[in-house]
Length: 288
Image: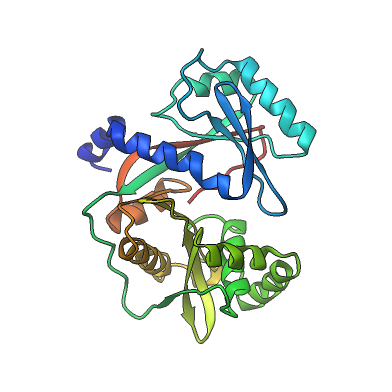
């Protein structure tokens, strides 16, 4: 990271920071109810699917968050059988970290990068057959399975999981309703899913989730056995191009670590802020 990049990351544009914060508050509301805990909001998923988290309450103007506030949310998450998890942007809510750490949680840092208004979509490497999937695409279950396998073998090196594991994971996600839920979100316009294919098999997939003029690229993962071929960059390029073509002004993402962030910087994203995830020790955290 250059000195200019570091300066940008230390002093994020406040208007863009607020815009991203509004997005983070809005995006879970399509599938969750919100419980009010003063300076904190707990998002509780309605129905089956990946559970949500707690985060700073949008527009809260009362007393600053305390460890006691965090403990009240943790107690509610335990009562509901939810993961004990908080997510926020460090630069927008700098006081929250001390409160969650006092409450006993461990904080994980993830680079947050932005492709701002006027910036072009990243170029895609040649040779990658990437498409945006419709809600009735028969490849949805396999495309959704790819990131599951990717995050199961973290890192950027070539791994073990391949076509056999992909087929098995796709069967599980089709049977438990995960693939159908993603198809429903595609049909409603809440999610856009893109995948890079070879011989009809998805080797990399990811999504963006637009809310008005802002979207987050999320869950981009490459089948471990197919890594180091530029497929993640190709899928990201397709997602950004789709977002731009549909009126999205600001595209952002959070990377799992600096190695992954370096890949996105080469694709044109710039460092902007720091996404934080807090959870109990040993729980682990994924982003990007």
